[in-house]
Image (cartoon, rainbow, N blue to C red):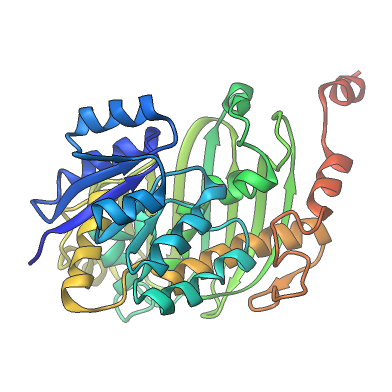
Length: 377
């Protein structure tokens, strides 16, 4: 098992999470370099985490540090171009979410991967806990039976001050609101557990926050296997929680957590008459490791060791991004959207705002305080 040379681009808050988790990979990763446009912040980050190489541009980092893997921890609007630069240089990429601001931008990755012979992966760390692996294996199998109905909620709270950073809450910098930037982790896990989605009907609104994008979305999704799920993404919820519930023929699988889970955040309930089998199936799986960045990092190294495709690679990350695009498209056009429908020429292929359809729809339906007070009176 080799040790991989890793570099981090962007040294904000999430970069510290990456650095701390790289230190917990048992020597599988060596953090050799960091990059940021802010020299002071870069130097402070490098000193704190013992990083020998510091660079102000990605090009200088690639030439000087020659890493095996680059972690992109920059704001969302920078992800795709930085990923392409690294991939074309033959360096593997692990990008924070969202992987791109549109399907059009994301589809540029295919050519870059082919040119450099490197692979792209997105940070979807919730896929990698032991309980998620067990649930994925059991859902749809003989033990738990066919999935029938599900719900997936990301109910978080962000005050108006959250949008003080100029790039937050804009279509051209963040790509969207909680659907793109917050709930995407949870419904990515739902897709990981249930498989391909087929059709979505959705609504989105700007209920209360000072943002250009939505602060709430709700979707009804049908999956290829026939399961039906609701997905709610909110930044308006004082009691924050992330929840998934999947009701199968013989068992209900539930996950309730916030920002990351341990095994005891999962609950499995058997249907009457199936208690022994369900309990036996669940307990027969490894159920020790929770979710987290280090779990995904280790899975990535194992895939590279074996010459296999990276987990949470481009194909599966695109499915998640396509669902986000479909939620926006349905919400802002008022009709159901099917998987594979958003292609070049479609208004939502080039951006989640749909060439201004989203902005117009949100501006027309936003409930401001004056209107609320008038309605209440």
